[in-house]
Image 1 (cartoon, chains in turn cyan, orange):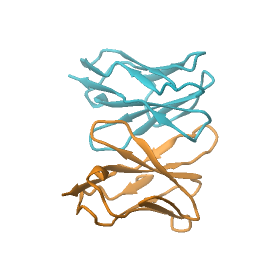
Image 2 (cartoon, helix red, strand yellow):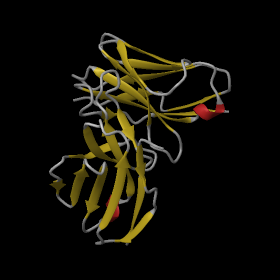
Image 3 (cartoon, rainbow over the protein chains, first blue to last red):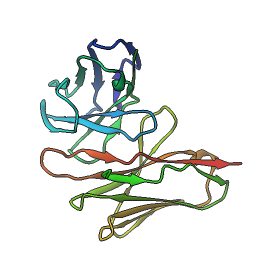
Image 4 (tube, rainbow over the protein chains, first blue to last red):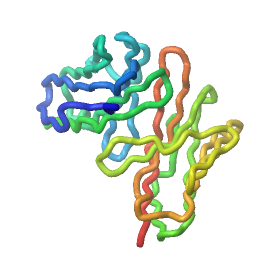
Length: 112
Length: 112
């Protein structure tokens, strides 16, 4: 059984740029959620996708957007990058909403 | 006030010690509860779910007190390999936001 895979593993961007992070969900999982984890903090919920539709969103501005594809893989897009966007971005998938989340190893994004 | 609050630690304990972590949550509508473990620069991994009746998994015991909105984790006979950050996690489960809400984590360092 393939787990959750994220790409890239590391990324450096400059302020104002745009970035796309990718996630392949675990086989059989139809729900994908994204989290931002700043240094020394717990992960913060960004949004969740179920069957290609966003069905939940945390306290993040609209410049954070996403997509889920028919194969349940997902993208996180961030526009107009700010220094505070530097963090570990985690993708998690589950078979049903709210239970049995499996996390990917994350993308470490650094904004300079 | 944070939705999930934990003592950040660090807890420095000798091998073989018993250590307890506590966590409080603010939303009385929270429906499911978990402890996750996160090693340095890795993704969170589910340690155990927490049930109202309390539950045990080997050296780990979790308790939930819904009236006090309080969750605990007890680790007996600590091993060096238990050194990690322990994240208290709740799932509110309401429509539109079936996502995980994480505490900031409690760091445990087990000393030889």
